Length: 318
Image 1 (cartoon, one colour):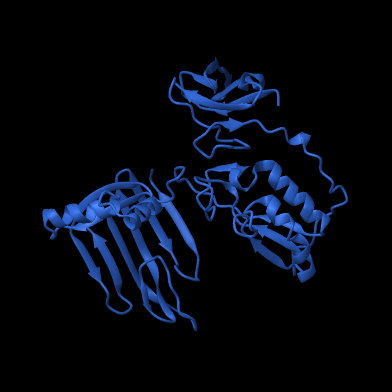
Image 2 (cartoon, rainbow, N blue to C red; image 1 turned 120 degrees about the vertical axis):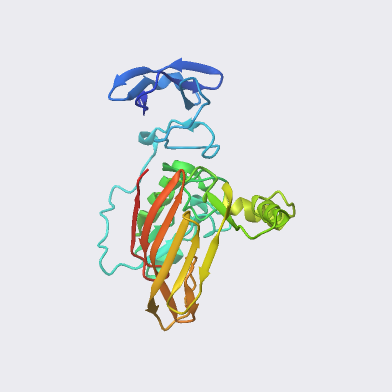
């Protein structure tokens, strides 16, 4: 890699930060900024500083050894010794896939740990492993659906070289590798930004108590853990809340901030559970017809089917 480049249009300056050293990057046209890769120093760890602000990781990083908030590291992909030159791929129609979570599939919880079990999967008749999302995310363990560095295999699983070793070994066992991805815009370590609406009929003491519980200020391990799961509490609002639980007429409104309605039942022989409100009885769920969230700076419109009927259409003005 001869140089490092980052797209930062409309900015006055961009510095490449390596430890305590800063190197001014040169404007390269079209909003791009560039600096020699050697400016990252012998370890190859670096970050970018926009307009003299705090160092930020490379959005196109290939490796985040300290997680999504730490510095990025240059990866020499040409240095890996592949041994799968004879691999010619496989036909997907009719293939048997095994969905694999790298963090839980083996006792080690790593890409290398999974290698020791590939022979078993091949003997079972599996044609390919489908890796659940393995892009970098906050912390060491998780589902991976809050990945924020989409080109950087998760550091706790073994990083880019660990993933290469797993792919190389899978091919040696005649197994293909399919990468599942999750593409979203959440902040590192904050999978959900929450706005809490409290009914205006609550007393000030009740309002404060509920707010403290959901923001984690009330104390208690379970409450703190819950608050960390839902992520950053964007705001706490008093609102006039209306709920309608009539059969096939579900609706919820919190002033003009949030409006959700569901009217069309979706039948199933199985009991259904869904995070989207509307569960009516085992074997039936209401399709969410309208969901409007308008609470600056969040302005969203959603038309969706919840549960097993997963058709989504998203739109936002901002």
